[in-house]
Image: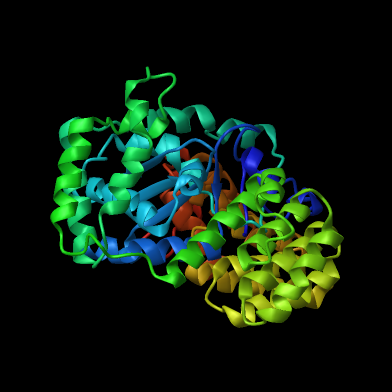
Amino acid sequence: MTSRSGHAGKKLGVALSALAVLASGIPQVALAQDDGPSLIRDTEIEEILHHDSDPIFAAAGLDPKNVRILIIGDKSLNAFATQGLQMGLNTGLILQTENPNQLRGVIAHETGHLAGGHPIRSDEMMRAGLKPMILTMGLGVLAALAGSASGAAMLLGNAQYAGALGALGYSREQESRADQAGAGFLEATDQSGRGLVEFFDNFRYQEVFDQSRRFAYFRSHPLSSERIEVLRSRVERQSHFSAVDTPEDLAQHEVMKAKLEGFLNPQVALMKYKETDTGFPARYARAIAYYQMKDPDRALSLLQPLIDQHPDNPYLWEMKGQILFEFNRIAQAEEPQRKSVQLKPDAALLRINLGQTLISLNDPKKVEEGVQELKRSLLNDPDNAVTWRLLAQAYDTQKKDGEARLATAEQYYSLGAVREAKVFAMRARELLTKNTPEWRRATDIVLASRPTNQDLKDLAKEGLAQSNPAH
């Protein structure tokens, strides 16, 4: 995996505690409270989820590239659809699914909500609750950063997040429509709707509990026996009802669950994936679990045979680099991280890991190379706040004060913290050469960050130059 925040975050990636607070005083951000939900970013898991989801999105008339899947590090069974074509899947729900078809059933149902426009809510409410959760991380780029008072005050934490999701409730009529739409999407992609019915059947007893005891998913998605039977009748009549998951899809589903279990529940993983189990998911889970339990040597001893058997798997190399980096073997982390990028050059999170390592080596040439790797990652992941934060650190090391403050402005802007973004963009303009692309970008951020009349007067004194209206 590549990163996380909050309680789960502290266990899911490379600790940025190895990266000192910037000498320039640029504040850092704390992303979630210790026991709250966290946003998990992991290229391998995201790839598996998109493999499961993209055909369903396309069948619903949605461009898969425009649908964002949020992996929420939370043990509760829940999923949700929000405006802006965003779908959230709790790790607790993923781990509860027995096979890909069950997970795809839930995804198809949530896609029914997206396609039907059900999650439309106040833009301000959703921004307040979810924007901080969309800080991009990887299980190798931890965003549980200690912050300044101003950074902490800026951050909208778990209460707002929970409140936003609490407002996402659907009527029984909308639920029925999402069921029927989801069943249609599965049929259109030659898949069975059996998994969705099985998923509902497995938890239908939750309908009889009161709100405090009912799974979060069924508080926002009211269930009933009649609704399940109507859905069952529909999917049993569909021509692909007897379709089954392929061996390859089953294997990938088990890898995803094993990886999540190893990171989130390492002790449980060691009990579940016993030493006698020599399958790939079990060995992978045990290696991750030992790493999470701060036994890097044992983790590496389990991981290396997997790499020897699967030398073209970029995620095994990524994991090796992550373990080495986190346990302060930074120079040794460079080679496996380079290998992961070589094997998967378009994966932004892998480049971030490599860039983070390079700028931590305190070699001017390595720092510059790290800057270039981070910039390249932004081509595929331009709103990654952690990338901007690392760039700010690298620029500070290089004594490029203007670029450092601009990168921090970008970090806050990507989080929706426009007040802080404006402050740092104004500072950047003072330090950058006038009319350069960087100076213009800083001006764009100021203009897009609710400038005051005084801010506009200050800009006018210097001349706005030509700004990009797209920003």
